[in-house]
Image (cartoon, rainbow, N blue to C red; front, side):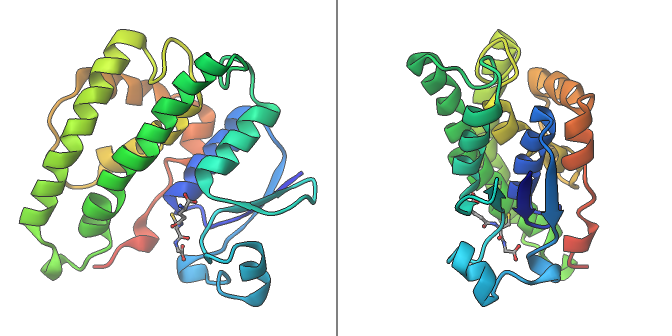
Amino acid sequence: MIEIWGRKTSSNVQALMWCVGELGLPFVRYDIGHRYGGNNTAAFLAMNPNGTVPVIRDDKGDPLWETGAILRYLAGRYGALDFWPAEPLALANVDKWAEWAKINVALNFTAPVFWRVVRTAAGERDAQAIRHALDKLQLNLAIADAQIARAGYLAGHAFTLADIQFGHLLYRYYTIAVERPVYPAIARYYERLTQRPAFAEHVMVSYDELRVP
Ligand SMILES: N[C@@H](CCC(=O)N[C@@H](CS)C(=O)NCC(=O)O)C(=O)O
């Protein structure tokens, strides 16, 4: 049984939960962070000195934090070989795209775009900053679009951990009120992701509680 600390409106928690769902793992999740609090208690900080979510504990082992590390742990321990290959080069290819999504796409989307649109009061939204951030994000999305058009999924022909790190951002990207250029391969890919039960359950989650009116 995996214990998971983190509110379901956290994008990192969503990536984790989607992975847990895809792998069919039993879990218990506690709402922690943002409006739920609980992440600055001594007990929580003893598990994660950063005070961030998600944190997990598997089989009552040491607590783990950092979503990328947690995902790799779960994939390595419980994932099938097409999801997280054993052969080092094939694995590095999946990890390359997962890491790229985490440190490029997520970084260019979550704070610069999503927070500015959803977590900023209407009167304080900086339309120009949002436009510039979207322009920067498009450079990443163009790369993903070409790759997905070629391969079907982000790291090749199979659904892998890289799709979790990239795809979990798309629900928010496609549902916030911004102008979006058309990326045909990503649009089709997103449609396919929405058909996956674990994506629908753990990623297509209302973010209304984060809104600043
Ligand atoms: N690098 C960390 C970042 C963790 C992080 O910043 N989590 C956010 C939620 S996505 C958080 O804990 N925010 C504070 C809160 O929810 O109270 C990771 O990838 O896990």
